[in-house]
Image (cartoon, rainbow over all chains, first blue to last red):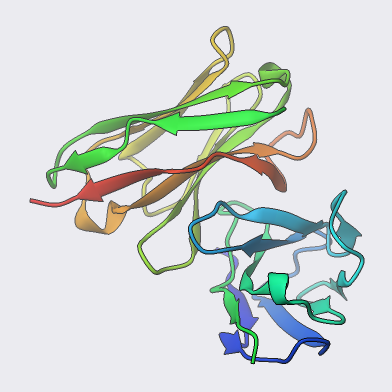
Length: 107
Length: 123
């Protein structure tokens, strides 16, 4: 199975900050990497698919990059509504594993 | 508006069985792979299972293989998850989710999600 190691587990930036979350795969997953946002009590929301493709309607302050085994998720100009937990997920190979999640709170 | 509505969750004793359903609307159900993803209380997301468009191919997490069966009824626009020999660590909110793109062979990014249904395995 492909393991997804996501870091940090939590962070507390300020409004307007740039936030970076990383996700490392235990094997090469090509481009098959997604990022989801989950707010408390809600279903996950797809933000980015295939490493860097922004889902329709998602603000452009969200972005993703990387290749192979190392990936990054960035939020520029952090907004209060970005408070959530963020997950990476690979779908290169079954099982389609998620990272452990990054809980983001506003300082 | 695309909708996915799960049902069938509840309290069940260890070793028991439960069948979850996910009724969908406003999209062509038989052109999308579908998945189940679960989340234990206070924990992260865990992919459970994915089924192909026709239902002929299924994929499972090791943690549920041999105990859970995913299926679909394309004539009724409904996805199912039959769960048996349930354990305490199966306690979670179960989400059904639809692929972002049509005709993917084995599933991809999940764009649409249901609201989830809680399965509580406890004596």
